[in-house]
Image 1 (cartoon, rainbow, N blue to C red):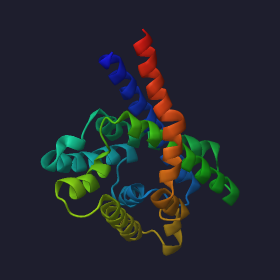
Image 2 (cartoon, one colour):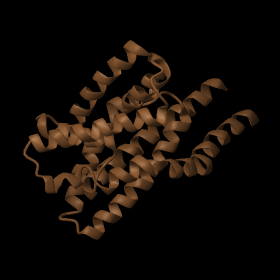
Image 3 (cartoon, rainbow, N blue to C red):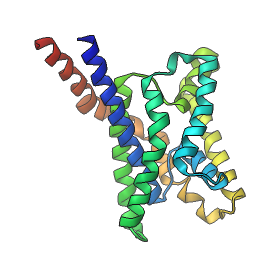
Amino acid sequence: MKRDKLARRIAMSLFGVIICAISVGIFKIAALGVDPFQSFMAGLDLVVPIKFGTLYMITNAVLLLFALIFDRHYIGIATFINLFLLGYITQFTYDLLQKIIVAPSVFVRIACLIIGVVIICFGSAFYMTADLGVSTYDAIALIICHTWKKGKFQYVRILTDVVCVITGVVLFLSSGGSIAQIPTIVGIGTIITAFFMGPLIEFFNVHAARPFLDKGVQDMGED
């Protein structure tokens, strides 16, 4: 029974990461701002001349080393699923949508932003409910807060998010991007993901992710 439950949680982690990766690709098409870590990645992507999927994996491997040194408690199966899959699925989604949605209007971009927010919250609910490790970026704030005892999580997370956004903007501008283009990587989408995702994730936790996991446990119990 424990093995079956673990398999279900792994499936939830895999599903959640795939959905989140697709949502990031949709955010990139919307060009109205992405979440703070992806803001950093967007700036870095313009500076480093390799494919986004590979760059994402290398960046997260560096962050993984940080977590392994200071507190490997937060590293799990889901961490590696995120590390190896998210960047490549995001790139595939973005490349595909660029062929389908050519020169999107502002209304289409807003629609993509809304869809992206809903999808990333849905995927995050499954990923978090599975409880098989966090992303390497999430681990940084958790280590600073719980391992090093340096402040409350919500404030530490805001600090790490601000650092990501500022670094992303600096990299973006240093690579030739204009100030007028900044809202494409740091915009309304960034504000929404930073401050308003929590309630929607909890909604999907209550109405989708937890019932899915609980139903699986009940079904295994009946067997």
